Length: 114
Length: 113
Image (cartoon, rainbow over all chains, first blue to last red; front, side, top):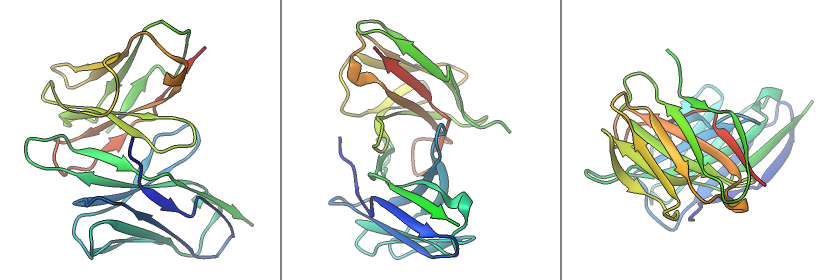
């Protein structure tokens, strides 16, 4: 099935560093979401973006909905050890009368060293 | 309030068998979606149910089926299991089927031997 292109695939960073990851698609979405998944758990929603160009923050996390509606990025500032996990972007396309499915990216695995 | 719950947490089956996975949505949520996550990949959409009717289906064979009950809980059934069906099966609930945010359960890990 279709998966969005997410980069980088993995990152090894030191505690306190900033992190940036992005997601691109060949299709337009009307909502972009960022989830974090830890081992043995389901994805947990971090940020939801509903309008092209929208920039939204959630604590140390900031995400933007690309102006073309085909991309999004996520930044994490001053990383801490509990930021470790796999980060997924997801595009959502919904319309009246149709299913509202999420199309996920390939994931970015984040490792934080002390 | 409780989040999305799924059962069982883990399951081991052999090829050719059938399996039923269960999901209870967040209280008040009327839509349930099912996703398959193969190791090392992002989740893939299987089904969405809203008000007990199938509203959408992903690119999965007819061996996969689901239903939603009057209390909005849902079951996913997979017949004639293949080795490639080994995956984490995730259930997500949302208020309705539109732009509402989908919240995921912890998943059921299925291993087919």
